[in-house]
Length: 168
Image 1 (cartoon, rainbow, N blue to C red):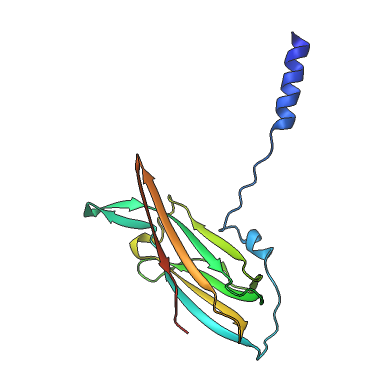
Image 2 (cartoon, helix red, strand yellow):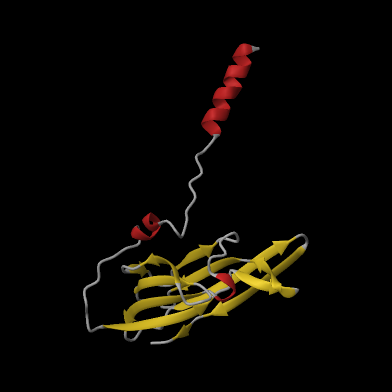
């Protein structure tokens, strides 16, 4: 019986995998995508604004519902790599909450990466937003930044989307 128990215990120990959580807040995950780009006239600079909601009002102004936000950063070119220079998250009052990266990262053709705002992270409030700075080849289409906000409470699900607007 002891031998059987020992074998089962060994099997269980070796079958357990360490689960590594990839966090969009962890700067090490963004460093893996970093790239050095030289200042070239061939790249066009842009800046985009994206509204996102980590909370919405529910029933009244004094009650809010927390949301999970998935921010999608998309290269819409099927030929060219684009470069994202900075992603900064702001709260309802326009105060910077965090900078996800402030160095160039690349997105290969048609590649997408995400930033996740956890449901429990309400630091942005009801009117949070992002500013993205980017560079792309002149003949290449602009990147798209979208957000999907979701929440599940009991049997009720809620989801909606927002899209970025170029501001520079």
